[in-house]
Each structure stands twice: as structure tokens, then as C-alpha cells.
Image (cartoon, rainbow, N blue to C red; front, top):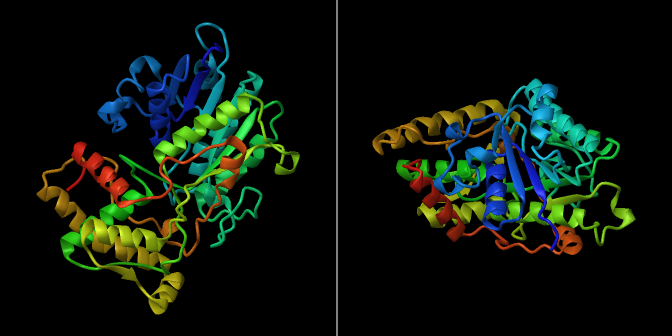
Length: 374
């Protein structure tokens, strides 16, 4: 029987990194795992089920974007090299200064990519975003036109392009839709926090733009399964990869649900028992022209009642949850992706093909277990 691969996860305590570690641990997929992160486990809001997967003996605190940290990160006690390196690191907050993304995302990707090439790592998986595509309601395939529409995506695309130039790097690029699941703190979580606040205010929750605006999603468990399947596929010889698909394998990871704002509005109405709707042409046009003030107004309206909900529930540490709405995520831009290539080439099937009320229930239950949820 072939020896199990050794795995290095950069950004190992981030949302995707910790779930990838858990997937590997639960299924005994690796001979050795190392998680590298700047954040200490005690400060990472880890739920109890991550205790073994992210145990101290697997963890190394280091900043992988710093050249001087790389030998400590990559060196192993037995002198061998890591088989798979997953770069789940980088700045995930929106609306930061360019310098922040340049340093924490671009520089990080290139530093670990160069080191992985130098050490002849069998497979280097770079996580990117579907926001690199030109926004279109038609689902973007991997070879379609690129026009990044968030700052994160601008620097992620630069990282993709620069990594592809590194001689000898066994690179795969994975572009993700909005990732959601238990303990999620980003896009879907923001919607749920807002909905909880509107329920408390007994007001209708209204979206800008239209119900057709695409906001594609993928469940965290499918993300981690896909990442592993892709690395194993690459290592086994890249079956079914045709020359016309390009030199570097790129895969969209997105569920089959074609999630839109309308999908989310319906699910939220059902989950919270509140009215949901859309602002209409006039207000949406005004918003397009006055985005900063519209976002500020929404946040002003919602942050105080949310704080009051937390106070009433006696919650002093609400984890990473907040209804704060980022301007970049309120744009009239479609996140619309086609996931056929991953199925066709790798033979991957989604266990959670679309977002459902049951999956939202699971997310809220996870928040309640952590005592984050009012």
C-alpha cells in the first residue's frame, strides 16, 4: 500500500485551513500534517471538534510571507520534503488598503510558492476566488474573461499569474465561490446576522439590486473534499487534463445551486419568519451613485440593535460574527461560476449541491454552541 502523503497547510487555522485539517484527520489521509499560522490556536475561535486536528504538536506559529521563516516552516525532522502544500493563507477581510493585500496575500503566495518549487513539492494548491472573473449572470468557466471586482481578487489574480511563472512549481489553482458552513464568519454569516437583527426590529429585510443577482455558494465540507481530491488527482498524474485547458490546472469549486440573492431572500424569510424583498430600481440607482453613504446608513441602522441583542443575551464574546456590511460585497456584480470541469476531470461530486434551510439551521446551531448567537 502506498505511503500516505505528508501535508503542509499555510493559514492552517483560518476557516478553510482548519476544516481541511479536520477532513484529513477524520479520514486519516496523511502521514504527517503541519499547520502554519500567524494566529495562536487560543485566539482563533476554534470549536471543540478541531482540538485534535489542530493540536499543538501539529501547529507552528510563523508568518509565511517572511523569507526568514520559510526554512523553519518547510523543514521536517526526517529531512524529507512535504508532498502537498495547501496555501489557505492570505488576507480575507474586505476593503483593506492595497499594501495590506500586497503583503499578506500576494507576497505570502509567492514566498511559499517559490519555496515549494525549490523543494520539489509534489502538489502546491493555491486558493483563489471566483471574484477574478468578469461579472456576468452567465456562469464563468475557468478559461473565461478575467476582470477582478474586489481588492482581494485583484491581488489573488496577480498571485495566480506570478505563481504560474515559477519554474518547477507543481501548481493547481482553485477558485472558490462564497464558502459557508458551521462557524462561518463571512458572506452568509453577515446575511444571517442582519436577518436576526431585522427580526428583532420587526422590519422587512430588503436587498439592493434584484433577486437575479448571482451570489454563488459552496459548503465548507465540499471545499475540503475538493481540495484533497484535486491534490490527489494531480499527484496521480492529472488524468483527463487536456492540453487545450492550459498549462496550469485551474478549477472552480462551486455548488450546483446557482445561488442568487433571491435564493438567500427566500431561505432567510423561511428561517427567520420575516418579510424580505428588493429595493427597486430607483433606490438601487441612487445606491450605485452614492455607495459609501448607503453602506454607512445600512451599518448605522443595524450595528446598534445587534449590539443590544448581544447585550440582552449576555454575550460578551460573539466570536467573529457581525452584521457589518462591506461595500465591496454590496456591488451590483454577479459571482456566477460554472463547476463542471471539476466533475468532469477529477470525477468530483458535491455532497451538498445547494444551500438549504437545513444547512442554515446547522450554521445557527454551531453559533449557539459557541455562545456567539443572540
